[in-house]
Image (cartoon, rainbow, N blue to C red):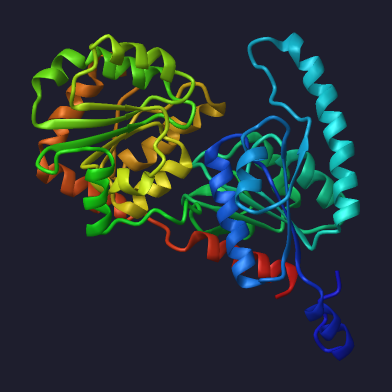
Amino acid sequence: MNTTKGNTTQGQSREAKPVRVIISGGGTGGHIFPAIAIANAVRERWPQADILFVGAENRMEMERVPAAGYPIIGLPVAGFDRRNLFRNVSVAVKLLRSMKQARKIVDDFKPDIAVGVGGYASGPTLKAASAKGVPTLLQEQNSYAGVTNKILAQRATTICVAYEGMEKFFPKEKIVLTGNPCRQDLVIYKENREQGYAHFQLDPQKKTILMVGGSLGARTLNESIVAAFPVLRDKGDVQVIWQCGKYYYHQMQQLYTGGKIPPQVHLLDFVDRMDYAYAVADLVISRAGAGSISEFCLLEKPVILVPSPNVAEDHQTRNAQALVNKDAAVMVSDALAPTVLFDVALSLVHNDDRLKILSRNIARLAQHDSAQRIAAEIAKIAGD
């Protein structure tokens, strides 16, 4: 791509041509929300930018991305099955089909740059782009790099990371510390808190714990609060917003109709106003996904992290440990959570001094304006 600015004719044609950006990845909200935030930052910088998403068929990005106003193409790619290797025959076939389709997408769209945010689709798309000479930018969200990004890094132009010390995975000269882009509607202010108490029908005089397990839910977190019902029923000064996840909601709702859920525990399948939920929360209980951690840092929220053991390279434990090492979070293992999680939570939520220390330390890890900083890197590569 010619970015010479000494030639006036070339410069004028370059300015007249909208920048074309492919953003690829997804599979979970932890990949999709940053991807959309990056797209919004690109569009803010270049209002006429032509942005195309490439995701995985039948994954949540196929709904969330169009809802955000961007076109998306789905690849038939799927993740490798580490438990049943025989099933990977079909996975390999899907990967080959995805590679062929990704090459066609790159040929047809002719991007100035391809951005990978992680997830199944990012591998075929960025590999196809780099093979065609298209510069690529990777966004690595975790403190422990995934296999796909480690492979793609060799030909990437720039690698945007959220944690220090990532040179053990990537070439140092390619790394830029930007943080993880977060949902842009998460702001805490006094009116938000007041509206949050009304929205969730909470008592402003009580301590509030927010427990979230992702859009689908987390079995261990749900088991942990169910085991703690007898204790919670006796704690009249604590209330809980419990997002059990859509996958578990029917099962958990039966407990509600059976009168087994304490009255101060508010069961939801999905929190539709996370800005309100964060605003009222004195303490958060969560898995240790990179996107969620970035939100906690920006919002200065004390948090107990329960890393999921069902992720590649156990990266959630590494994410959580990075915070624990700086006294910026408390970690409870998945194995111990059903027996000790709420003992820890109820003790912590009443310890105002400890909450303040956690809040202060996690705020120090926040990376602000991450999406805009990534858009600035895209500008450097694509030729602003």
